[in-house]
Amino acid sequence: MAGGIDDILGTCGYRPAARTIVLYLHKLLISMRCNTLPVMRSPAELTEAFRRQNLKVTPQRQLLFRLLHANAAHPSAEVLYAQASELMPGISLRTIYQTLNDLAAMGELQQVSVGSGPTRFDPNTDVHHHAVCDQCGEVADVYVTNLAALEVEGLQGFRPRSTRLVFSGTCQRCAAVSPSATARSSNVPINKEQSP
Image 1 (cartoon, one colour):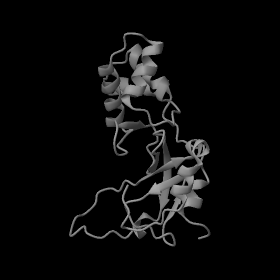
Image 2 (cartoon, rainbow, N blue to C red):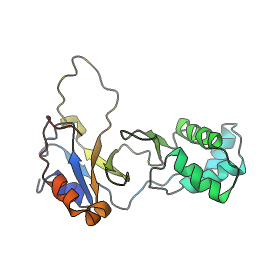
Image 3 (cartoon, rainbow, N blue to C red):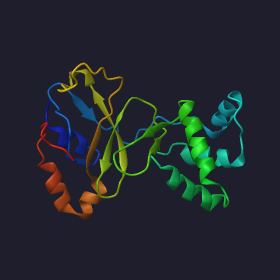
């Protein structure tokens, strides 16, 4: 494979700063699908899906369906609450959480934990991983192929059900503002001794 992980992730403007796993670049391919997002079902389709589940459909929930449709920002409940409150004063944070949890239970969203901070909600339900900017908190979807080639030590009989990788570093926007952040992150070797 030509180039390293920095070249691969840098294609979409992401510069990783640290990793907590061993990556064997000759076996693993990590890529970002720039400007592509599996689109969540339309607000009308989600309304029908809620009705089929005998869940209450309210104007507040329909507003959330619209805010989430084609949203690649991985918003938290609090961010959605702020956006919804501007459009519909009086909407409750409880309604936001209940609707997000219902959507996640229906398989329409993934709950994403990217380290510190609140849980994020991702309309992309494809199998994928995340890159998180340490400066601005932006979360981007990344795709890892041949994940079976990942060699992990220390599991001692533990049988993983799933794998979630989170790359932390500096996004293209923040790197443009602070070139020293890019210089630091692009010189980080990939090895198992590193941690964020």
